[in-house]
Image (cartoon, rainbow, N blue to C red):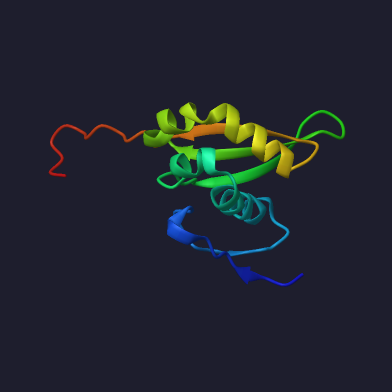
Length: 116
């Protein structure tokens, strides 16, 4: 298994990492890139969106699901194209369910007397 650099235009991923080409995250970045170039109806909506990560999860038995983590601030934009995006991604990942989850970081409130 060779490793290659994930090449995605316009920052679809927050971090450029060394990814395995057979990894679900790499395949998802590739699918986003292909959708943006081939599907004109969601091209304008996808250009400002990016994802945090993607994980492939075993569901019951032989079924699998791709869980896509998106930033909490972009959840409304993803919600607008959710139906079309999931339908296209399920075509790309045949036999797998696609789930979009908004992730956010909960910051602890400052303690009394702290200077930060």
